[in-house]
Length: 415
Image (cartoon, rainbow, N blue to C red; front, top):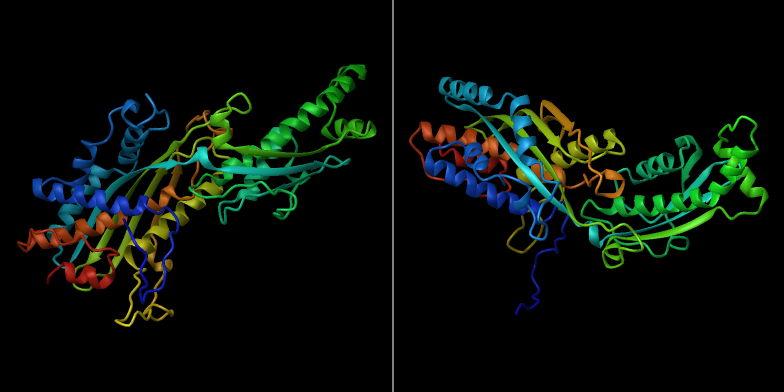
């Protein structure tokens, strides 16, 4: 039974991929420790422990078709020429005493809690055919407005220029849910899609009538359909609410959904100055499956941003306090976020070409999973430091501390 206590430290809060990234640190340390004990490279240990098929993935499903790590791992390993580079790095390390290189691969199986999120949308069609959408989504940086616009465009078959997304307003969309776990956009998009579908159903009789009245059965334009319905005083304003939990409890009302996994793999190569702890990230590759992406540029940007977020978390952003509890990281002199020099010199992101139809409009959450993939850089750094230690007869494991800041990297070499 726990109890609350007062401390002299400021309170902390969770941020982006919490619990997943901490678990990643723990399990990768286990893999690395086993690899060192068996005198094997970590990627060999990892490959021997990847689920062989989809039947092993989920505790509540016989099969999970969102699991594709084995194929993604093999594809990235081939594209990055991992085995060749691994051998070349070993030769390079033999010829360089105080600068060492390392390469590392890792993967992520990120469970997106699709069943507990909810979204609400309000959609209005004007007489000129333009559309106004107001929604309750709040995914900063995830491009929710852009994806909502594209969902409307795809469903109604109208250009993006005819669609405007208004400001979030709980007077208009009061019954919205929380956003998080990379699932907020999905519930918002589905609420918008439901609005569009009701508009289509409402306008379809006018579309059919216009086709019948046309001498050559020419299909009318969107604006003509809207204008015909407006003349009959047909309401073209719709509000819709979507709940993943509701769809599970009441499958007759909405298509049922379930949680799924966003899977991806990454590979990074680094060079470490053993004497100073300085790191240069030579190259990082990300290969991630986000389903039928609504906007590849946003999803690639999210993958890059989350990855760099993880670099700061793992390598630089350490919270230090004095014995009195005073923060020692309260200025730019003492707190060092990632800068341009800290990101990979060669940064490559590829989205898997998959056809995933089980989820909302076929796409997957992308905001948080790539942050976990940043561990490939930390793993490569550890392998570089270990190469120096083993060369000098130091075979013990001493790389458990996180974040692995420059001072800890320097001390880990035990020069």
